[in-house]
Image (cartoon, rainbow, N blue to C red; front, side, top):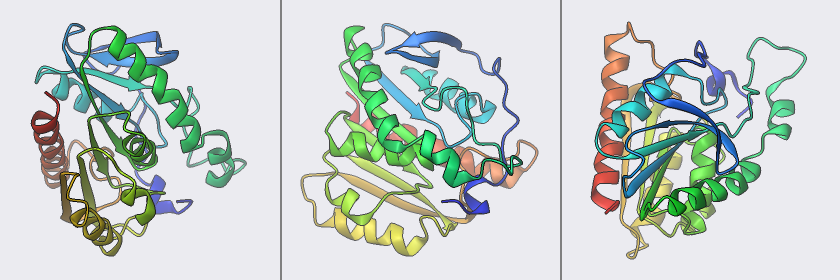
Length: 240
C-alpha cells in the first residue's frame, strides 16, 4: 500500500465542503454529518488516507443522505491526512500512526452513538484504507451491510470471516486489490451461503477511482457515479 498507486491523485481538501455539518464529537470523533438525524437507517463512510475533508467524499455523503439515510463521515485520521509530497514522512511511517486496527476500535463508539439516537440498521462503506476498517466491522458483526471500494490491506482470510452482506467494488487496474484477488474474494463468498454478496470489477478504471476522480473528467465521473449507485442499491436492499 506504500505504492504511488494507493495515494495518487490526492484531493484538494476543504474543511467547509459539502452540504452537511461538521461536529466536534460524534461518538468521540470529529465528523461530517448529513441527512435526517431522526432516520432509522445510517451509513458510515470511511475515508481513504486523505481523510474526511475530501470534497468528493462529502458529495457522496450528501447524495446518500438525500436518499433518506443519516450519514456520518468520521475523521478517523484526526486531522492528519497523508501528504504525498512530504518526503520526511513516507507512507509506512504515516501508517504507523493511523492503523486500521485503531480505526476499527474508534468506529465502535460511532456505531453506539447512532444506536443511542434510535438508528436500527447501520451500513458502512470504505475506500482503500477505510475498506479494511469496514471489513473488520463486518467480521465483528458490528454493521448490517458493508461496501468495499478499491480495498487495500484486505486478505482472503478476512473475507472468510465476514458476517454481514458485503459488496466489493474493484478496479480493472489495481495492484493493491487486483482483479485476481477480487475474484478470490468472490470465490470465498460463493461458499458462504449465509452471507449475501455482490462483486463487480469496473473496467477502465484504477485504484481510487470511486472517490479521487476529477470533476472535469466525464468518464471518471460516470464510473464514480456508477459505484455510488451500486453502493446505494446495496444499502437499500439490506438496511431496513
